[in-house]
Length: 317
Image 1: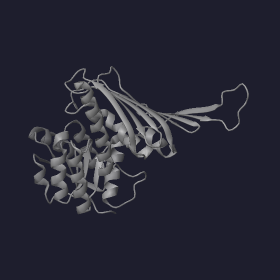
Image 2: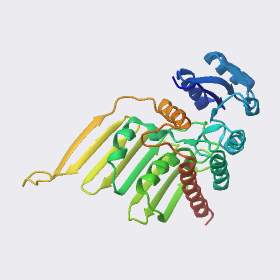
Image 3: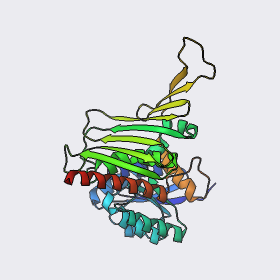
Image 4: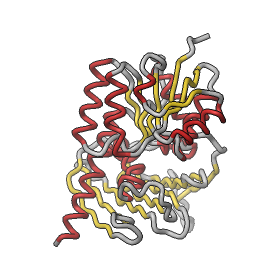
């Protein structure tokens, strides 16, 4: 049996508590403790999972091998920097940091220390995405909609860094081409930040992506449509539904020249899959499809920040 790895979760609010639950359920991982600046919250999660409670990540030194960081976005850089400098492997929730320069420093630290730096872009592990990602060859046009009802949680960042960045993370490595043109617009509805945003990205290889995100909607919607030569794919991330339409090889007069099918993927545990991939990477094991590396997280952040910059520029004109 593989040697047990020692883990901790830093920041055990809504999402961090789930991280802690997943580590506690893994047979080859020991959840050493949870960290939160709110001692009552740390103690409550620790009691639930039978582990220790800490109020500072500095208390983890020498006690753990890897950490999940699910603290506030502005604290990601500082905590991840300290953990990487201490020789720990790090899974940090998205967005990786607040600035690209901070992300670059974390990547350099991870490289220098030969430590894993993974970013928590959870949609990569959605069962519907896992079922189609290897079937997407050369997308020509991509349209993504990600809508959600307003929730106070997550409003420390704009809707671009909160929601749109999920689709950016999926699309950028899929297209594998430099951005030739980027246009964006957005408005504030319920907060002082941007609550509804749209971005149109033209890639050097000719692919176009039109991405819309809202956190001021009445219902949740997470869908993506991709068009490639002779084929159309639709993905409903929320319902785990996949639709495929292909041009027929043999055209019959009077009939539509398309064959279509749809299916619903079985439920999965995306967060558990993400954490299992992180643990496997730390062990040096191959992970099918790879993980969201620090560099992947950095690229998604860079484009998201440029979209924000364009929207703010538009608002000042």
